Figure 1 (cartoon, rainbow, N blue to C red):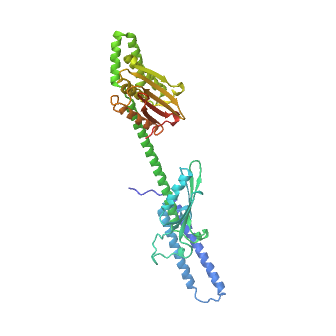
Figure 2 (cartoon, rainbow, N blue to C red):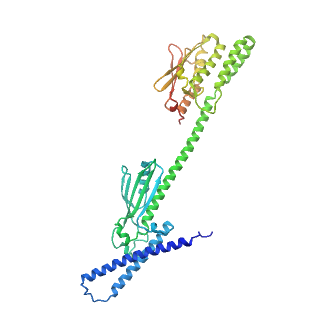
Length: 433
């Protein structure tokens, strides 16, 4: 594997920048040393007649420590940032980070990232002003053992760093201004280096923010994928539950129509017409989950008209539903299930038959549909397996959540009344888990 190519221009710029950075520190310390000498001469009124070599030796030792410390700073900055320039060599680091969340979420993310930074202490977090302040204990990257590293940069001033981070609200996003700097005044930058510790802090916080944003995005994508899968599963379950055209009813109707074609062609024609209307509204539709109350009424009416031809005067029908309620969203075959229960378990076991009522009423944001009969009622003879009503409740839960209900009570003086209550507004209808 070949080493990465380095442009000669970049190398030259790095050398020049590093050279002037070291020279700046040398000049600052040399001028400070000369100022000390002048002050000393002023204190002694120029009466010092000792040798000059102690001053020369002190100056050489000081410059040696300045040079070695400066080169160590340059080298460590290059290891951290991968480059050396004016911005990376500076003791004070500033970052502008855009977080694609609203300001409150961006602040929480920023606060957590700063709190996880090693050696962070004295954190002051103000959510109302969207500002975080913190002190970061500076750890000598070369170790703290005595005489392991002599450095004139530690002769004075505080040895900790500080962080100031502010979130500026924008259009649905938060812009973070991050400042990492030494705990000393800015004038000390002429004489001190921080060994890249503030650069390290700024890079670490920026990485932490980027990682948390990426995690949030992955979580949102996973949630969206899971939601889409659950919606597909819900649609499949709804289609399975409402695709329940009763085979026996279809066979019996066709057999009756075949018989009537020989004995009473006109009634056979009526029966086939009602069967066509019933089947037209009973076949599963893959393009939509919800039907309307009007369509479901037509389906139930066709079903009951077929039974009236078969049962004769033993079955009577009364419908009282206002036209303005016909547009109410309703899952397919749900009303049909309640009608089938009324006939099978209420009227067919009763010798004289009876009446089925379909009643619609509007409430406060809801529509109630009642299917009532005056048949056998809650009796052992008329009881079914309960699968149909269980399916109705399951479909209500899938489509409306807790916004819909099914109530079944005794109908006075005989029979059963099942009332289905659903939201009236289409925008309140959705799939729920």
